[in-house]
Every structure is written in structure tokens, then in C-alpha cells.
Length: 67
Image 1 (cartoon, rainbow, N blue to C red):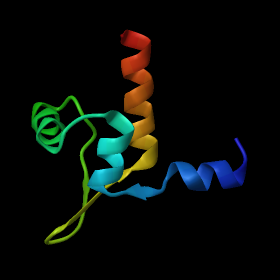
Image 2: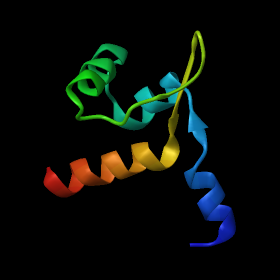
Image 3: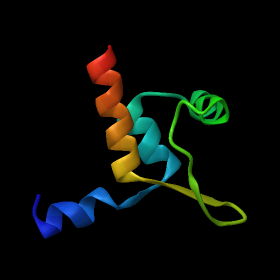
Image 4: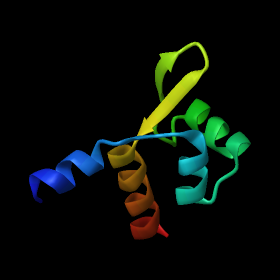
């Protein structure tokens, strides 16, 4: 993996990006987070949560390999 690819893997994603990547609803994302079956978000402020792109991509890969 190149340095550029590595930087892109650690991009912080908004909820709408996570929804688009996973095809899950907002409710389902938070439900799975509460159960511990989805990556936790990073709190950046009172009303600001982001997900690491690398965490979401790893979760997607795991779903594909187990699906």
C-alpha cells in the first residue's frame, strides 16, 4: 500500500457517507453499534461524529467474506 492509499484509509466519514457505503439506515447503524457489531464512531464534538474509513471498509470486507 502506498503512502497516499494509507492516508485515504484513515479519512473520517460522515454518517451519510457510512450509510451510502453500507446501505444500512441510520437506525440500523446505531443499533449495531450498541450491540457491538458495527464500528464505533469518533466523537469530535457535541453534535459531530465520524467513522474511520478504514474501520468501515474492514467491516464491509468482513461482511462480504462471511456472507
